[in-house]
Length: 238
Length: 238
Image (spheres, each protein chain N blue to C red):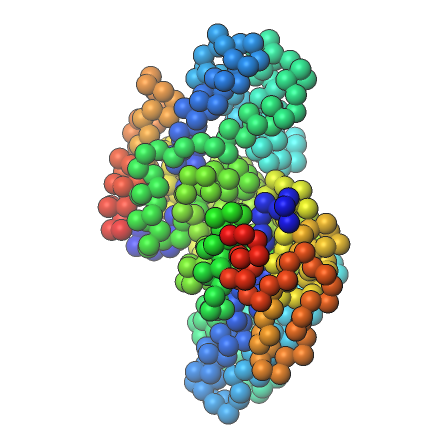
């Protein structure tokens, strides 16, 4: 970690609590459109479940790189159909507002304070599969102190493709080993390490709710393992 | 201006004083390498004079898009040769450090305070031909409060190509008329207006030194005309 000049962060699950944020906005939306019976957290999970397969179309080259706002919107319409709702009857403004719930996710309680400490010493940026507008609107609303908005859209490739990590280091004007990925997901860290980045695991044990079964600890000896962002700041001497 | 959601800024000359910043770092560099007789401001002007022709190679399609750090470095080596200095004898570390003077430019005196006011109401980002690392390092050093780092590298096109303006609006998720370019250069504003952006002219009467002959006032009725960034904030009700 001595060489590291910049920290880049996974965002969904690592910086923000997507499940509770989506559920919060889905509850009144579903009620307005005739399905108050649906569990909004199950709706959030179903929406999120379509995330990796949608990006995989781009990663596999079957579709040109397409920003996440567009994929989220397509996935939303499909999840609505799965629940017997016709997107065409809901209307553009309502669909767009619901889709933008991803722009309004709240950070985990200690995240902004931890980032504020880390920013004194490091360049901080998201390295998220979220697009620039999504990440920027999220940061503006929640006062997340990024130095730049990076990620899949700027790199033109979705994680865990190597280009997402390597192009981010290149854009920052640093070597891969001068860049550290911070993530709550072992798979993301594995891909980052394979591209030569430093790695920091942060535990988020309720990203998927109280019964979460994945990423409950580090699978490999990552360069840093932290309980949360305040702990990460302490371990990095910030 | 009622529709405007985001302000994007020209940087060299509009936000920062490139001439004095380059001259400040060029003076000891030239002295160390045997040319203490050279005027560092004339050296800055000569370096800057190669800026537009270098980008024009990319704009005209004779060269793929190449980030400004690379063009600046090539231009530096050519200006050194013009002054009888051999870059090969100066060495990589010294050349790189001199090239990074563009990352260390100081904002005009009221710029950060004005931006801080404007940021309460608008999304703020550079829309500069400078690359991401250059703009990020500059902002970190001088505490320039951007919400994101945008510009030619993210858009993949150098101003005044329409793509530089239009792709920036697209990345921000807004229409061109919801985006306002702030610049001290009538030509930049003209191109932005042709792409449908709102326009704000800010007077910088010494960008090129005390004898500046260009951009001493608005050439067209731009949407806003301001004396500096504090005046811009006041005129936009921030």
